[in-house]
Image 1 (cartoon, rainbow, N blue to C red):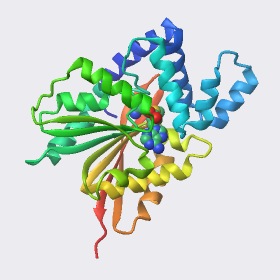
Image 2 (spheres, rainbow, N blue to C red; image 1 turned 90 degrees about the vertical axis):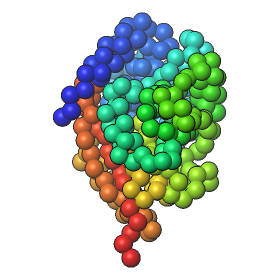
Image 3 (cartoon, rainbow, N blue to C red; image 1 turned 180 degrees about the horizontal axis):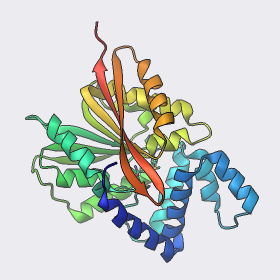
Image 4 (spheres, rainbow, N blue to C red; image 1 turned 60 degrees about the horizontal axis):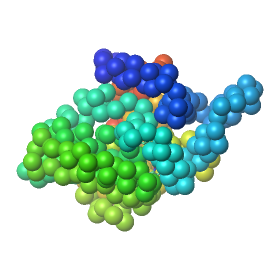
Length: 282
Ligand SMILES: C[S@@+](CC[C@H](N)C(=O)[O-])C[C@H]1O[C@@H](n2cnc3c(N)ncnc32)[C@H](O)[C@@H]1O
């Protein structure tokens, strides 16, 4: 297991947010609950213990994390409660920089590497890569929620972030990632990051087919040897099987799949799944 001290720092920060209460505290608790429990277990828990404080938004999230309307509502309510603050579904850039920066290092050439944060929400992951990559990167932060995209755009303009490499670029895009290929050309991306997005689809009542579609689209738009890094709390026994099964049926491309442990946050173990696209040998 990798030692990951920033996770502990994040844990302390998150716990204090929960103690503070209010909407931020509530959504952090929701994120925690949704990450730990499957919808069925959570439903049973709510029914059995008659939890009074779950809002209708929590109920909507439990069932409908694959729906644009759910996320528009989530980000609208989140932005009403406080001045804009990046919201991380679980850990942030510091906890996973050792997974991302070496990958950029190994892939970099004379052109900027094209990196996609798929389902970025209002996470600081994409902007941090833009800021801290010493190699030129073109970072696209894409989300199905127009609200999240607008908040990110406004925040970035206010902050006027300076990249470490002056050739780096950062942009935001409203996009349903089940249609990645409509926006990005075949084999055009070097790295795709997924922090909680496919998890959200897989944990929704009607999201399973969308999750498969997103993975297939990723493998279409990744260049040869480009990778999808997926951060998730799902156990490797289940996720590796799913990735291998879905990655097989792609015709032109085949996926190699690997996993590493990231660390523990609030008693939950997180993993980094790496899916690498390779052309099928003829
Ligand atoms: C669990 S949140 C994770 C957000 C962010 N990556 C983070 O770590 O905080 C899932 C995100 O996926 C987005 N999403 C859900 N379905 C999507 C789709 N089909 N295309 C693009 N984004 C989607 C949601 O709007 C939401 O921002």
